[in-house]
Length: 154
Image (cartoon, rainbow, N blue to C red; front, side, top):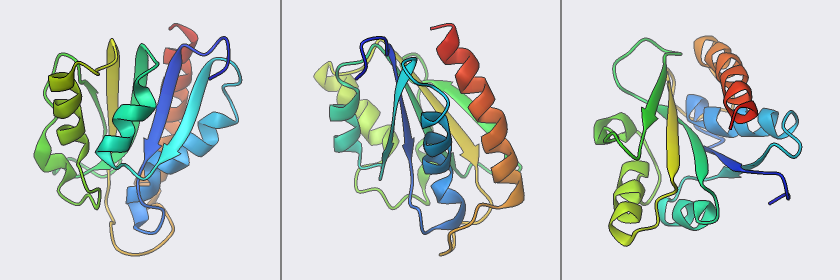
């Protein structure tokens, strides 16, 4: 963590499952735009690992692909400290412990950051492949700008 970093952004996903890689894409591009403002990492999304990664931060932002039956590219924002994360949104996940399960465990163990924001981008294609669908790629662009604004005011 850099001396000035107050926020951790975690982009999670699977690089080889189409839109499931959107969290990784957002993290890669954010890491080039936020020197000193926040720490940005990529993760495969294993919930137990996420808890360890966010333990020294007060403000954590997690970006992942979701399936909620909304239009592809829809950006969902959840305050995971005060709102429950819908388990069904992560049914396409290949993570061993899902994000909602990790948040529940962290809450039970007293390991939640003070602020935990989850951004889910509605995916369209979760089949094997390495490219994002057009709607998801456009949503990623919008979310990057939104996170940069959020980090600047943190």
